Amino acid sequence: MKINEVIENIKARRSVRTFTDQQVSEEDLLAILEAATYAPNGMHYESWHFTAIRNCDKLIELNNRIKGAFAKSDDLHLQERAHNPNYCCYYHAPTLVIVSNEPTQWWAGMDCACAIENMFLASTSLGIGSCWINQLGTTCDDPEVREFITFLGVPENHKVYGCVALGFANPKTLIKTKAVKVGTVTIVK
Image (tube, rainbow, N blue to C red; front, side, top):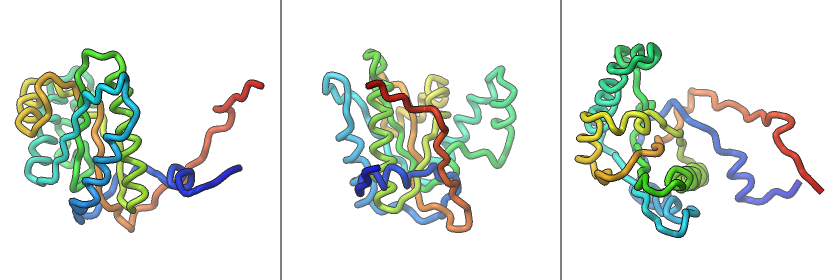
């Protein structure tokens, strides 16, 4: 099988859910965000928006508002999370990037997914851990959540399609080895 630096980087990427307190440098964050803007996107509209939060107090407030939205849910699992004082949807990462887009285009979510993957690969290449965060996508229309993310810079007409937690992996936490599921590839000749 062919191997090069890009393929090795793809194979090395893992979701990190335990971070140190060390903040990602602004230079690295800008490189990761730039990589996001180079992702493929429908009709080259680039209607997405990336809101990077590096302020601990604002991240805590965002988590609290998400938990408030969970508390209103009929889903018992979400209610448990809402009332768990230790629950943190972004795993206490020092940086969170909110990825949003205008929901008027049917491919808006796919555009955001491509941008998120570019951020994952860029962060891996820089030795920075990352994890996909979904909770804001399901709660962004809750009035208290919407008010706060608009305040943070997410355009009012945007839906959140995902977030990227960024930081340095806690060296005491074991990162799982990837086991590729057999039978997931078919080649037709």
